[in-house]
Amino acid sequence: MPRKYISTYTVGDAHGSDILGVAVSKTFTVTCSSDGKLKGWSNSASERDLLIDEDVDKVGLHHVSVYEDVIDGQRVTLFATVSFSGICYLYMYVHKQEEISKKIAIKALDWVPEGFDNERKSYWGCQLASGGAEDENILALTTVTGQTEIFGFTVTVGDETSVNFEHRGTPSANNKSFATCVDVDTVQKRLAVGHQDGSVYLYDLEYLRLLYSFESFGLQSSISSNSLSTVRCLRFSPDGTLLAVARDSGPYGTVALYDVKYGESVGSLVIPTHSSTVGIGSYAHSKWCLSLSFNEDGSLIATGGLDNRIRIWDVETRETEAVITINKTDASDEELANSTDIDTATCCGLSFIAKNANLKEGENDGLVIVGFDRAIRWFREAGGI
Image (cartoon, rainbow, N blue to C red; front, side, top):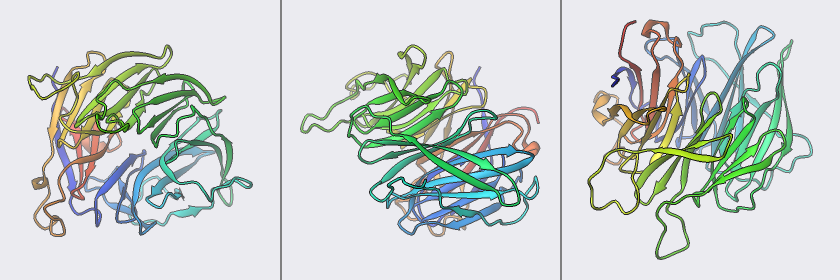
């Protein structure tokens, strides 16, 4: 059955430049931008109050991830973000109360484990993952030289809450192509890494052993050895059984689904097209797909990219359930005062928001979208509140 999504709130001019990443925890919607700032917005307030405004790196930030858990009765949030200088920054906030109503300060962490040579690393993608009550938490970082560094970490709550990191290893598939994105599944204990040449590698998270590789069959350049199938984003389903991969296919954006247990392709997300300009196969977006996200129960997946379209897909049928078109006019003229003609409403990042994150907006799925026009847009599925 087709679904409808309605806008619940928009913050125009949320950053001083392009917003390139977004991550969501129970408490915060966290954004990072090429203006070098990390910002956190309230999930519980209808007007999405700005709670965190941290100057991180003037070179600019492009990826962000967030971890939040309750440890011995104390809620703790960790933030990871990577700058264009190749540095990974980590911050921590120890909650003093369940609902935050004013700006807060977050603490920078000296996270590099003793004895680990971090000087020559140039990081790109980052992912924090909770191991739950029994397993180790994970920080995964990709590098521009094709490597992936895996760190385990534990949070100790007391008079002085601390985080201890340990370098677990560097899984390798002998691919020196730019490692563009990473995701971690602590349910099935799997790690997935995407590369600029279109390759995706699936590893056992416990032993960091290569299990499967998924090659791209998209368009290739006829004038160079460079791939036209860069992996832009990949995500595990909540139960860890599926891996969704967003790749380029020339100018188009494709999304493939893989069975994690057997390492097989189980289909793609495609829209009908009668265009004679499509060279090979079909696509999910008419331009590159930069971001994707599963909802809380894994029944839906949202994809978005350079075509200004957000598509909501039914995972089982692989059919489009809803399409959201974003436009600069979503924000008021006052909020667009600092934008220019080149600041388009393109989707650079998106994430589903768990049900009941904002009780005033009902029990339906929420969705947040960020892009080049510096605006943050929140939506929810239409229905009873």
